[in-house]
Length: 402
Image (cartoon, rainbow, N blue to C red):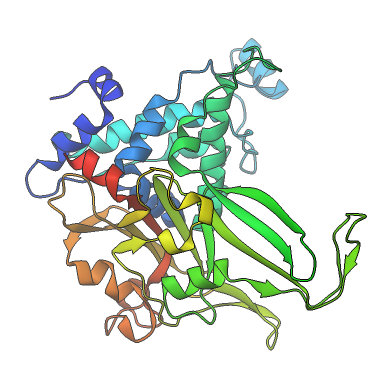
């Protein structure tokens, strides 16, 4: 048995203790109405040691005071009466980053303890409340990648709140990056290069996930090659430099490369796109393959390929899939947890089962790789296809398993 304080000190101890339990070592998450997108994303993250550690490392921040009750409730309380129930669901309160961090810690602990307590699933009501989601919100289908951005932003903001009030300015060391910046933040280097004059412009960008094209790409490496491909600008380009002025069309090239990559690499496969022929959004159901071991050195900027840092080799740890079409469907996730004996598990809300690697990886390519008789809830139609991939840098993954 491991206590909450011990879990806070060593978050992996809890997950490893639970993973050694018999039969069903992992708990599911209850669906609040239409929250499969959230459940699948949370399961993809919560079994990754780096995510759990980043959550537990977030320093405690005082929670804001609760909002005052509405006037009718105050008047009723003064008379010793119960306030009348509203005719419609109340509006959700704004998201509170400190509350989100606290509820994520609580959820991680409850997921770890649930199997030992004989619970096959836990709830997420406190987390959605901290995110400002009301009773109506949990009944609306949302996009898993957009929810990831919402959750990530709240957790980053919670870490930044802890550094408020510290001295800043010239000569004062910058505060250390938040735990989530260290784990999930990568950097790109975009450039514009003129071929007729010695002019180059570079700009650095940051990301917490990479959004990669599926249209026209049959594999993850094909999409990555497209992401970093150099292209020729067809229009005139203004260098805004008095020495070179405007450069004619066809003489300027632009491209992008990775300057640094995070410990945990989240990839968003852009399966939803606008169809100009129909004037509506559609889902791309075609095959898109991805490896279990991902090597990214070829996509790094020249100055970032050496440097003595860990090699950019990643291992696939989670596949979040979507079945259905645009605006409807169901999300599930496949995860290879720490301490799971190298095996893959399928998380479908409260249902958790061990599956073969082929079911978690190859069958999620989409297209002809999908199993027969699949589709939403086994009723036919489009089968699940990968929508988000989570890779962990090999050095981090092996250190966690040591």
